[in-house]
Structure formats: C-alpha cells, structure tokens
Length: 196
Length: 368
Ligand SMILES: Cc1cc2nc3c(=O)[nH]c(=O)nc-3n(C[C@H](O)[C@H](O)[C@H](O)COP(=O)(O)OP(=O)(O)OC[C@H]3O[C@@H](n4cnc5c(N)ncnc54)[C@H](O)[C@@H]3O)c2cc1C
Ligand code: FES
Image 1 (cartoon, rainbow over the protein chains, first blue to last red):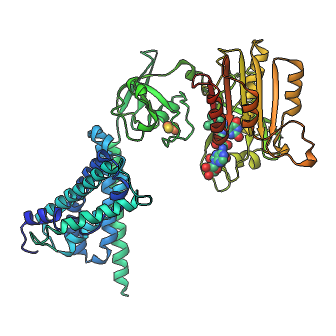
Image 2: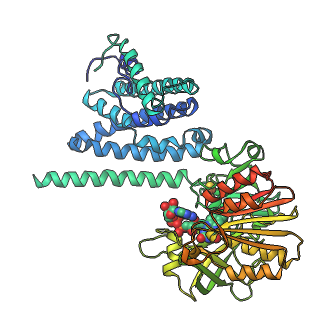
Image 3: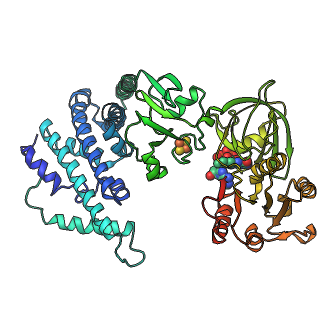
C-alpha cells in the first residue's frame, strides 16, 4: 500500500488525474449525454454513486476472493460481472425505496454498466495497491471529477447552442474541441499533487 | 497448462457467477415484491386487487382491460396513455416526449412505463371496457393484389363485436420458424360496422416483417387467430358537409368501413375518396367502389396511379394523390379529411390540406 493520504488521492482524482480530462475514460456517455445540463447532472450523479459502490465492493472482492484464490488473471471478468450485478440490484432498490431519484437516474443506470471509467477506477485501484480508505476516496474523487467534467461540457454546449458556428464543426467535433481545451486547462493544475 | 489451473478457473468462475445470480434473484424477490395492490378505476366503479411489480399496461391486460398499444411497451408509440390520479410517482424521462403540458396537468401517463407499486386511482374511458379478446376462425384468405391479402374471420358462435368504422384491431401471431415469440400488430377493420359476427382485415406484406410474413405465408384457412380490440380514435366526426378521404395501399381498409357506415346510416355527407397507387397492379376493390359510385351519387371515387404503364390503358388520374388533391379540392370550408396510409404520403397530403384551410380539428388520420 503506497503512503499517500486518502485526501490527496481524493483531490488529485478530481483535479490532476481527472478521469475524463487526463485519463480519457468514460468518454462515450460523456459525449453523448452532455447536450443538456440537467441530464448531464443526473448522469454525473449516477456515475458517482455507482463508482463508489462498485469500487468498494470490488476492493472487497479483490482482497477476499481473488487474491486468496490466486485467480488474478480472472479479475477483469469478475469485476465486470460484479459491476453488472450491482447496477441491476441498485436499480431495483432505487425503484423501490427512492422512486424520485430512480425517476431521474433510472434510464442512466444500464448505460453506466458499460462505462469504462467504472472498470477503470477498479483497475487503477488494483494496480496502485490502494487500501480500503484510499480506494473509497479515489472512487469518490473520480466520480466527482467525472461529474464536474460532464457538467462543464454540458454548460458550454448549452451556451454554444445559439452561437453561429462554422459548418461542420457543430456536434461531436465541437465536443472534442471543447474537451481538448478543458484538458489543456486542467494541465495547469499538474504539480499540485501527483498520484500517477 | 496444468489441469488444476483449468479446474480452478472454471470452478471459481462458476462459483462467482452462481453466487451473483443467487444474489440477484433474491434481490428481485425482495425488492420487486410489491405485494397486493388495489386499483380503483373510474372513481370506485371498478376495483381490482392485483399483484404489484409489473407495468400498469400488462397488469391491466391480465385483468382483461386492454389499453391500446402499438409498440408493445417500448415507449415508442405513445398510444398507451392512461389518466392516473394517484399512485404513479413522478413523470419518467421515457414518458416526457409523449406527454404534453396539458396532459401533464391532467395526470396522463404512459401505462407501459409506470409500474404498479402500490394502490392507484385511474380513469379509463368507458369505451376501453368494450375492448375484448376474440378467438376467431379464419374463414377465407383472398389475394387482393400481389402483396395485399384480405383476411376474413368469423367470431366464435354467439359472440359479437361492436366498433366504430375506422377503428383497428390488434392481431396476435403465433411463434413460427425463427420467430420464437408471439407478436401483435395493429390492423384497421375493413368490414362494415354493421356486421357484428365477422371481422375483415387487409394486410400488406412488408418484406421481412414478422406479422405480415406470418399472415402471408403461414396462416391457413380454418386456423384459429387471436384478436383484441376495437381501438383507436380514427372514426367519423361528421361535423361538416363533405368528407375528403385519402388512402394508399392497405390504408383503404378503414376508409372502406367508413364509406359503408355513412351509406348504411343514411347520413347526408358528400364523400370523395382519393385512392393512391403506384402502379395499376396496386389497385383493388375497383369494381366495388365503382358500383357504390353508381348507386350513391353522394360518393365519388378517384383512384390515382402514379406510374401507369402504356399497356395498362389507364384512363383515370395520373400522378400522386397529392396532385389530384391540389387540383380538385378547393378549400377546407365545411369539410373534414380522413387519411390513412404510409407516413410519407400522409405528411405530404396533410401539408396540402393545411394550405387549403383544413386544421388539426378537421384532419383525422392513422399512420401505418
Ligand atoms: C393504427 C394502425 C393501423 C394499421 N392498419 C394496417 C392495415 O390495415 N393494414 C396493414 O397492412 N398494416 C396496417 N398497419 C401497419 C401494421 O400494424 C404493421 O406495422 C405492419 O403490418 C408491419 O408489421 P410486421 O410485423 O410484418 O413488420 P415488423 O416485423 O414490425 O417490421 C419489419 C421491418 O419492416 C419495417 N416496417 C414495419 N412496418 C412498416 C411499414 N408499414 N412500411 C414499411 N416498413 C415497415 C420495420 O421498420 C422493420 O424493419 C397499421 C398500423 C397502425 C399503427
Ligand atoms: S405501449 Fe407504446 S408507448 Fe406504451
């Protein structure tokens, strides 16, 4: 276990090691669900929630199942199965106990199962040998960082809706350009903390 | 590779996926069990005790209350609207595109999207209780054109159906060939509304279509088929002097029923029926409509062929229906329009009608 404070990990994963802006993970839903600020917020919230839950559970699965059984070579399959199962149960539970939240996030949950940021955080956690508390803060930070990035993109895209753009640049091209500029801006933070 | 490694790999994968599936099924049993729920329909007129956990649409169908639906619950048709006064929870993102602001205030919901999770109070229009299921016997299958078949079905002895001319039925297929599931599709009734013991449908083959392939290649005379209905708000309003009717292909079905309805009820409306076809081969029921035209001067039949061949000796209107419409209908005053056919044709015709002064209140249509 590396000797980094979980709080450093938390802030680093939001700012200097942002899942989208420096790791480019979870791009598909980031690009496709960012045309409206409101829905982007819903997705960001759902990703954060699922990230924290899956990372914590995958940490336990790794420490107490995968390592003792010496089946590290199966970790990808197992992590994916755990994520898929957890999202299903989460959806049913939310539908039951938090219908308001389910109404907002319900349609995003199945989409998140295949979001690579989710698997990415779990795999980083394994590669970097994080302990429990470190993993928890890492997943929370990564989720919030993802949320921040998608909200920024959505806000910018909403502002640009009425802008006069050169033909051919609107849509996906524009999103990539904005993301690139945001990523460059985030480079400015590098050096504050490092975890990678 | 070591045999024990293979064994451990397979064993641990099996164990983990087994454990996960057990957890999911237990969660489903616990979380998705909403117990018995009470449904109050039309202010206490009907009370049902149902098992919660499924969509309102399928829960009602299990209680023999059939809400119209053309997409089978995928939230793409918007037909399954029901007024839910209590117990539906917040509007879901999947419903939003189909529920207008006014409908929101009236608590309209897509019944295929909302789940029965507790007691609910609903309002269901009286005529939907009229919707029933019928197990009919196929009396005859007739080729009307190379791709349209007329399906005539007899209701079970002693049973009758009451529908408004123009409405449609849902037709259920049985599994066949590679299709492992029952599907259902909407088909307009082409027979007379006065005929209560038979139902006729006109079914055009859609290449690769599940239901139409079933009807065209699998279904035989004397087979049993399941129908439910009648559904739909495509029927005569009659608040005018003249009815402009427009159909293409199998869209002729509900129009045929409408024309007979006006005649049999002795209504005073003048009628003009524009029937669009691509080629002369696509025309059918020509003799029958010509005969009606001779017997009832209030009715005019205007078949339009877009691309007649020289050897057809076609003497009627040439070109798309839109051309005939443009030339022959002067204004929307005192008229109502009834359209049925493909979305492309309908959109083109509706545009012309609106330019002539027809409005959303005087244009009625079913898009196939
Ligand atoms: C209110 C209403 C009334 C209708 N009345 C009639 C009627 O009287 N007679 C009649 O023949 N049909 C009618 N239809 C259309 C009918 O319900 C089916 O959609 C159609 O017969 C195709 O069913 P399928 O199962 O064979 O095709 P599917 O298996 O559903 O579709 C196969 C493929 O064909 C495409 N496809 C589906 N429908 C069409 C279409 N209409 N044109 C072109 N491509 C299509 C699909 O996108 C798909 O790729 C009506 C539809 C509605 C909504
Ligand atoms: S059944 Fe089609 S939208 Fe509900």
